[in-house]
Image (cartoon, rainbow, N blue to C red; front, side, top):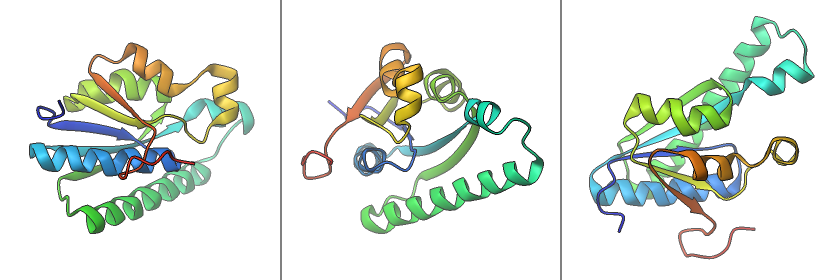
Length: 155
């Protein structure tokens, strides 16, 4: 079933579910001689509402923190799985829009693998689930990961 996918997108947010999705995506990409794109979307609506006007140093720190997190995560995945064709991306915007439409269009994504739930519980209560939106609206296949590599439910 997962034999044809070459361009796998994994949106990450620091949750255990997202990390499990990344391990599974690495396995799919290795089997298919494909690549994994690891994406963190910095939700600009969060900063617009809660911080008011944000100066450049705050934005720079946010980006640096996210890139450090992504590099550490990708290095851990490379060490544990041996995958080499894995790329880091950080974007500003609405996670729904970037994950569902913008990134897949720009990178020819043919599969999105993502965790069932993320860290943004308040956002999910107010706006609805990003995972649910992506699953309903993406133009490519979506796999929602609920278990780790041993198929044990993630807690």
